Length: 498
Image (cartoon, rainbow, N blue to C red; front, side, top):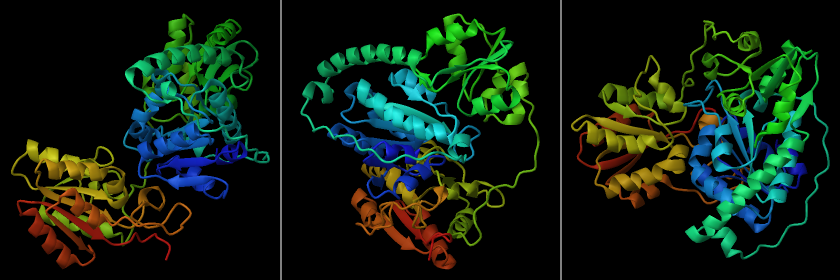
């Protein structure tokens, strides 16, 4: 994906780390011609990249599926404003929830944002599709969604490289009706979006990315992404309508293909996105049992999917995830457990503290909820001892606004920031509080304790959780006070390079 974007003349790339999308920006950062950045969060990353595209530079935004939720506000309006130079939105879904708090099928986003979506089935296609995405973006004045899934993101393949080609950069234009989305302008842009959608639908009928592969005519599949690879292994003689442009739908091509096979089967991951559309078209096709809408597909499951059988859960012995040996979070949660408090958790390595033997984290919703849940739980369960917990990168991502809200609304309680000086959960990426950029270049360092004081917190303490006695004493003191306190438990991750 990174190589294809680089070859296409990519100038600006923004992201917040999130598996399975993290490596895209890490790879792009190796190219000195690309202005690559780890942004504070996905909304910020999206807006910086979109601004660069409207300014005339080919740009890319990358995230995982839940990260796109954070950027949904600008995404929906970006569909109206369109772009000047190409803008590609890469979103990596995580079927099977290998490193996520939920499963989402981002194909639905294309439907309700009225944006085109491509879905590669291999690394070679990823390189090819991102280049085509830039062309579509500029030809039709639209951001382009490019969906990946875990297996495609983490697959290797030999590919043929090309030289980088940078297109002429258009001049920044002052176009108020196009880029200022007050209601009157937005109404006219919505008309444009509907017209553009019809043009894109015509493109889907002729694009080479939606291709028919003729087989023996007995069995035919409509499929996309990694499901196509699995099916080809099991049914090499079948016919295929392999979709690369997921949305808009190529209705004429679908109907024509359906007439060429005796049995038509839709195989997709996760939701019945294609299946439901075929039903609306009146095209009869067999589809997978609803039990396969949970969890990712795998090659060994394909025969059951095609036969329409229910998913048979195979019990395997799995190694349970756990905090690393000598991780500073062990000390932090040991102290919390001894105090017997309710811990409102967050997204990060420390979420593993919910597992035995610690079992000392009691809620986990999304980035930043360690702060806001602390406030809400106290309203719902007054008198209970509650502590909100989140990491340093997570605090910068979306914890600051919650802390401002808590101070403004006179909330009380303790917020524990587990500062291990990195974005550890996704492999140790930098963030504003580390003082280093994505290329490990020194930059201005965000001082967390200064930010907390500026938010209006009553008490801000910095302590090393490895100093067990001092940490436990401080934590107990703050928990029993009628104040809003932040304790920054600062000790570097053991996996950081020395």
